[in-house]
Length: 166
Image (cartoon, rainbow, N blue to C red; front, side, top):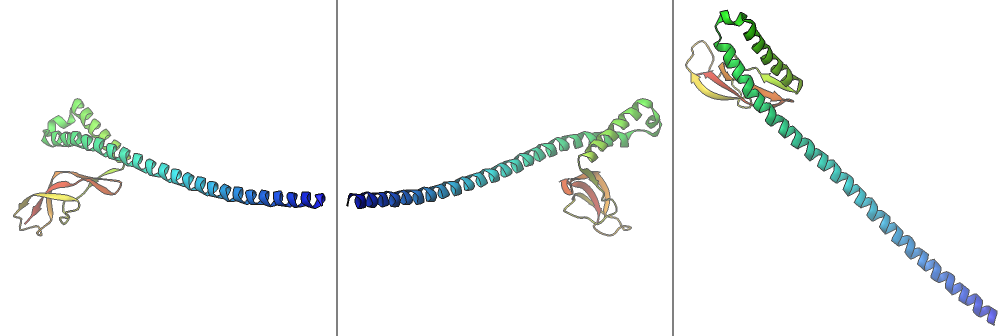
């Protein structure tokens, strides 16, 4: 009889241990799934933060490029107003070389000029400053660029300012 009691007590302990083992397995699975979700959330957060940082860098880069464009505009204005005899001066050639270096720097950073002269007006790429009566040109055709427009990586950075035919 005592043997039966020991055996029965032993079976009860085994049942309890099996029950505890199942509870532990269930808890382990819940913890594992929670950890996996937290890890996935963290990885997604890191990707989002990286995208935000890249966007911020791109925004800062575009701001810097816009400032450089205003310097380039001044070089363009100065070059247009130079008399022909001064264009051969070595000092002037040096300044124009700096202008070309700025253009090359911008090109290397994905900036390209928007060519509009002779093209039909497109509000996505330019702003009309003035409409001029011109019988030789079709209405809405760009006659003159007042300020060049630029694209960066395929999208408009700064629209051109133009004169169009009426």
